[in-house]
Length: 218
Image: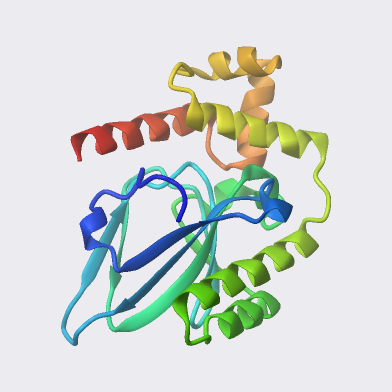
């Protein structure tokens, strides 16, 4: 298990849910992996409400692969029946390799035609032992991502640094603060956020502050 519960508004409503660390080979592409599994009685619904990170998630479900773009509002999903998902909270460097314009999937969930990724993760999730299938699913997902994004540019690494700074430093309250810390212009910060995140840097900062406020209230 890794990561905090920041972003999850009502953790007691979660089904079986794990956050697993990204293997070393993809730590520049994935912040962490998350795997929910659920088996709910007939007629029962479990609503999951989230103030998501200012980032995109690549998600493998039983019947599809989807890209959940960055959000500007609270989101929810109603779980019913039986199911699972394996998601990767993507770092900015990975996003640019999957979608040309991240802003085009803002507040959206786009189905992707990635049968090879779906096949290897689905196969891993068929293992009887939960711990084993989670580890194997993350391993398969990571191998696919490393093939899709073999090398990072200096710009992509800078975009990762921008995201880490905004999400991790409460003293960053304005895009100019991030620019000063990174030693670049405010225009560069705005360009990086647009190309690799799909949100303005000011929106990324607001999302972090909303998550912090929700965590304190909870």
